Image (cartoon, rainbow over all chains, first blue to last red; front, side, top):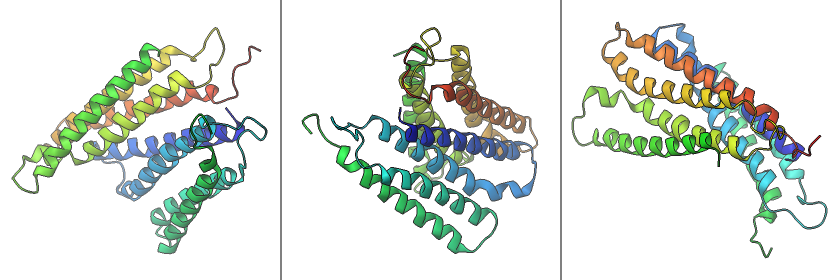
Length: 135
Length: 143
C-alpha cells in the first residue's frame, strides 16, 4: 500500500471515530437528553461519515489498487492525488465548522468548492489508470 | 475469504434489503396513513444503509484484503474483529427497535436502550480502528 493511500485511509479512520463519537452522543441524547446544543453537530456527523470516512477511504483504496504502469512511475502523475487529499480535508473542515459555529454561509460554500476541486484533481490523477488488462 | 468477512458481507446484504423494504414502507406514507412507529423509523432507514450496509461491507472487506500484520497474526486480534461485528450489529438492531418505541413512550426504558445502542456502536468503531490501524502499511515482507 503506497504512503499516500496510508494517509487517506488513516485519515478516514479518524473521521470514522469522530463521526461515530458524535453519532453516539446524538443517539444517546435522543434517549436521555444530554445537551440541546448537540443537535448543532448533526451536519458535522453527516459530513465526517459521508465524505471523511466513506469517500476518503474509497479514494485511498482506489489510489492503491487501480492498475499500475509497467514502468516507473508506476502510478503515473500523482500530483492530483496529493492536491486532492489536502483540499478534501480542508473542505471537510470548512463544511463542518461553517454550520456548527454559525459562520458565514460562504464558509460552507468554500468547503464545497474545495471538495469539488479535490474530486477533479483526484480524477485527473486516476483516470489514466482506469484501463483494461490490455491497457 | 475469512469467516468473519463472510458474516459481515452477508449481514450487510440483509441490512440493504431491510433498508429498501423500510424505504417502501416510509414512501407509502405519501399515499396512505402509515402507523406512527413506522414513521419514526426514518432515521433508522439511513443508518441501516450507512452503518448496516456501507460501513459493515467496508469493515468486512478491510478485514479480508488489507496487508497482513505478521504471518503469525495476519489479521491482528481476531477476537476484536468478532467483538466489532457483534457490537456493531447488536447496537444497530437495538437502535431500530428502541427508536420508535422511545418516540412513542418518551418516559419509558427505551431511551436507555438508545444509550446502550450508541455505546455499542461506538465501541465497535473504536475496536475496528484499533485492530485495523496496524494493517494500513506497506506489504508484509517477512521482517
